[in-house]
Length: 147
Picture 1: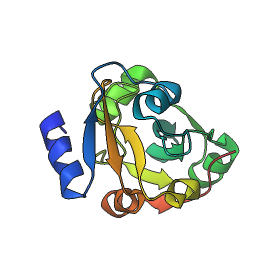
Picture 2 (picture 1 turned 90 degrees about the horizontal axis):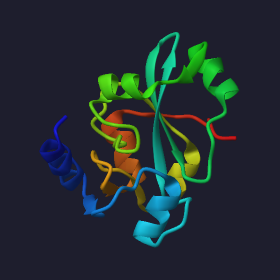
Picture 3 (picture 1 turned 30 degrees about the horizontal axis):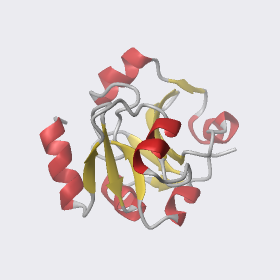
Picture 4 (picture 1 turned 45 degrees about the vertical axis):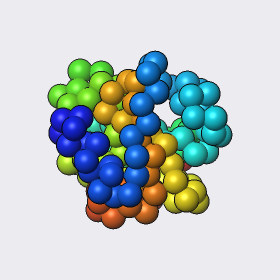
């Protein structure tokens, strides 16, 4: 999905693209750039599993518990930067929480917020969305995967 299409999709879902004008590839950079807290920031992480690639969305304070994920998907590992680009079309740090057409898991902690801020399709952009819209659009499975 191209950046223009992503921007249209974010707007269609009632969100917005934040143009930060400097790299925001980490939770710390996103917190600083948006003046929010880590629990509002979300990470869109790509894993390779025995059942195929999986997009896992957790908040910025959480780490993914691979044991929990592997109970559902068999052996799992982080995707390499090359695999992330091939699967999603985006660089690590820019993967948006929507528009990635693979099985999606959203940790319940993400749904505790009215809005969340995640990847915006480029390393200098972020997306701000209602987490329920992410679940709805991605047809995501809600599953506790954080440590």
